[in-house]
Length: 487
Ligand code: HEM
Picture 1 (spheres, rainbow, N blue to C red):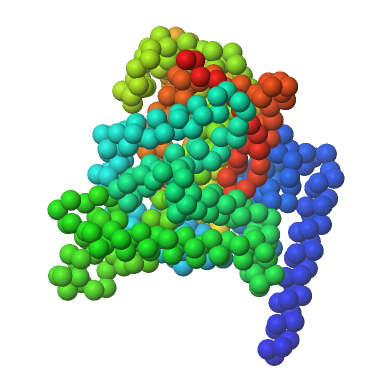
Picture 2: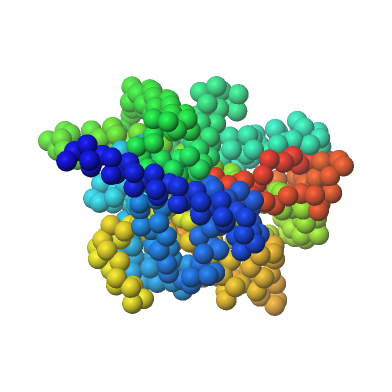
């Protein structure tokens, strides 16, 4: 029966593929599928799912090729799954490409006891090396002048903010993980940051989604070949940096996350525990995860913030007026946040509207679950549609416009909103939320204190396009801005 079986599975996969393509082609032509947020459709599961939720409600199933995926939409439903039933919905769906990234090790694409231990270790130890208030603030403040210097070098002429911003936020993770920053011209560092950035975009490409549905297509997918090369190169560089740190390790003076991991590993080995989770694969992939999850996300959000300031100069005016009134020319610090409610609201509203991780990272059910009257089998892939929460029209007054008042009360005080789920929620909530919030606040206020952002000459504010470029995260489409220094 074996040849029959192969013929059958190839045939059914092809049928699925054809049906899927037809669905996408049809959807492209129909008015119904026209999306306000972006133009591409095939790599565009996020918006497609969002539009489906408008038609089918807060819980429905879609088929990604042969795979059944449950989509959860709207604040109440997503909260119920991720927070109230956190244990049921808290596992990660390790798709073929996620497996290629980490082979089940590390934090982001792992499950079970190993994930639990790595997540716990990362949270507690990173607190000491950066995520704790003092440590991380100092590291960010140290980095800000380097970013400002690059912006100043453009002397008010239009430039693309992508690389300097990505390098600056990469350096925060580098300082926390390796205990040092790198020069923006260091080829080892730029290679590392550029590769991580490219890998995120490749992961969201249409062909990689095809590979997730039909892994046997792998050998014919160029993006996959490129991605695997990036993964191998990154692993090599991380291994090399770890080797250097190992040679100079002083257990009494840990420089960062890597040192702390190595000390724990050594201690366990010395006590005869040779079979712990503290092995090289978990070290290398946890480090890769912190870079992968912590740089593109924060950098992209910051770039959205600058673009929105250039597009809405009257909002930029109010941010700059507040910064100048409250802190003048002093260096903004985290403690100033409570006195900058408007600026804080603008940063939150940027995250809400930019909605950079629209489908979170897919989850699976860890056991058979009954949810809102539906039975969902253990191991079913689940997409908590964060986009549908951040744009839920029963939670936000004007969900599709940039409106900082979403986070302000009538007296202009900052108000927290439960439906602000840019970092997801529950068991898998973003591990770097505290750090990311601090980075966004300090980088954003420091840049706005120093520069006026505007479109390039000949481009009007209206011309600045907010259509995202769709990848695994939603990035601003390629654009340039002028950063004119006040001095
Ligand atoms: C996971 C958002 C910054 C590390 C996630 C998830 C989201 C997210 C939506 C998936 C949660 C889920 O599966 O339900 C963001 C945003 C950021 C940001 C919007 C910046 C604006 C960071 C930073 C770090 C980081 C700076 C590192 C220090 C992680 C890790 C995970 C994760 C390790 C996986 C957690 C797990 O699977 O247990 N993030 N993130 N993130 N994030 Fe972030």
